[in-house]
Image 1 (cartoon, rainbow, N blue to C red):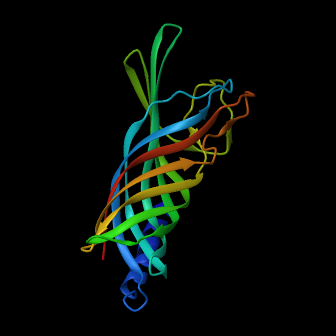
Image 2: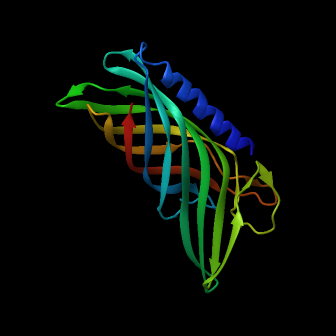
Image 3: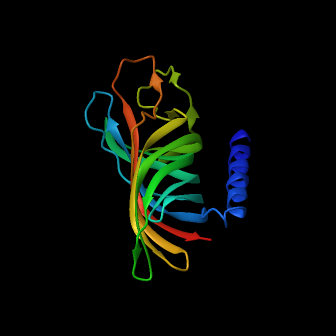
Length: 225
């Protein structure tokens, strides 16, 4: 409930900025798209983690604050789903795991927006900060599946070193994107994101090097008012 309240208040705040933006040049827009997400990092032994990409989606509102005629600071509030999928053969067992993790995300981007043809070229970069608040972990052994809620905690104790449903709330990293915006306000952009935060919790029962970091890329449609 607290997360939903935070998201709702953030939307009201940004909408209020938009309603008073005509004299300041501040723009208000909607964004939504599909990403191919993955989790990179290290496995229990410190070797490179081998997980597969999964399709996920994001949507939300953005605000552009002019710095100069061609530069803007762009922020907003986004709902962003992330995750990955793994498959392994352990002791003759066909094992799979898929993660679907929900975040409220705030981008803090610098946008270069020069005129090009009948619109504007979009080149942007900057950090993001995200807060995990929900999600599911689906495990399958020889086609027998179970689904469990993502558990948010910094540390936990578990005798099973492969029970990887424990995550930290905080995520952060970097954004990079480019695209094109028509004079009508409609835009399309290709974006990529590299997570810098360790998002998995520490299992204090074992001394291991497990490390998860979010990463992804995708396409986003937008409309500025």
